[in-house]
Image (tube, rainbow, N blue to C red):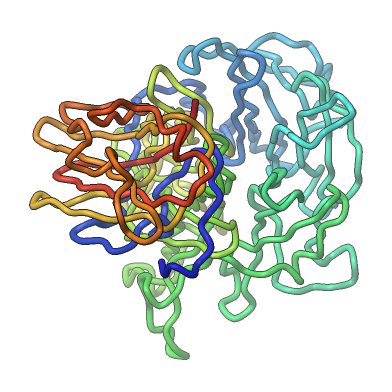
Length: 511
């Protein structure tokens, strides 16, 4: 940062290292992506059924001291797929209860925890389409903070439902997002995925991240973004900008008419991170399309089939996305695991135990597209079955991911040590806190400079009490003279970090 650049007013907000916005004059420091741990649980599960499955479009929230999951159940019948939305709750995010709600008079299964479909929510029969997502509307003023988007069938408009308790739902708006079919357009849009909406307090608008097919490759899924001041005011999906898609940096195949990606993004699970300023994350489902790439399917192609795993992207504005190293964030399991072939991230993130956050995903050993094609009634002769990609357990389940608070990315030094300086900052608060992990041998020292590059008296890195043997999401930084920064509050400052073998996830000034 040059001296004539305006300092960044960060107030007392938490700041994450999702890119190099807070890193200047660096040496041996990089942004590192951290992966979650699979808890190994099946929190909600269907196993052994040839026709009942948990769908891939589900949501989680933690409100009023209770964890809540809304999940779709797909019933594959001879007359089509019948889909309903179910509700489960938990006191700790680990042990889940599917309560008998009795809201769906037409549902014959157990438990009857249906909240939309078969009579619940005013929807008769199954919804017929799985494009469901639930979000907590932080902009709601009518006492119904839970919102759900869903539609009755693939040829029906996407509707908006609202609820005060997450269980009793009322349809409010007939159309939230328009994929073109209802406005006379027939473009490349197709909303048959989980389309995400949330209130973005940074721009004071609702943001939507939706599926948009790219015409050039047929059914090639991308993520498009729109914004609106009202939930019924989004632009048509045709007119939304594409913000994420696979490209030449991904696996490619020569089609004879040019090269094209062998993968696309099925769902996006985009969100604005709730515990820091200007941090957005996306967890797109990478879909590897067998009919495009694999030579063993050159003559007999499975239709729209292949595995799905979860990737990672970050942004500081929700528009420009960084896919970082493009590596797997949460990958498919071993052959006998419940998530052997496909994973879909649930929309939402919740606080976990102590220093952790929880996320959830639907995993299954049923490969996408396994039950498609002319061989539907003769499964033993199916191309996927014959090539070893049949489902062994026919299991679909929701599992839990555990990751450190603020822990998707960090500013990481190599083993030789590194350093960096932030741009000019104006803060509010008396103390500086770090989310930091030094492991056993790492050390960190912090200095505070003015915008001319000179250390304030008593706040050089040599005055700092060395941070070591520390794995803490809120480590207070202290100098020889103490930790009180009141004299610097409101002034333009630059933080200097000297790091050896450590990860710095976040920083925050606070009282």
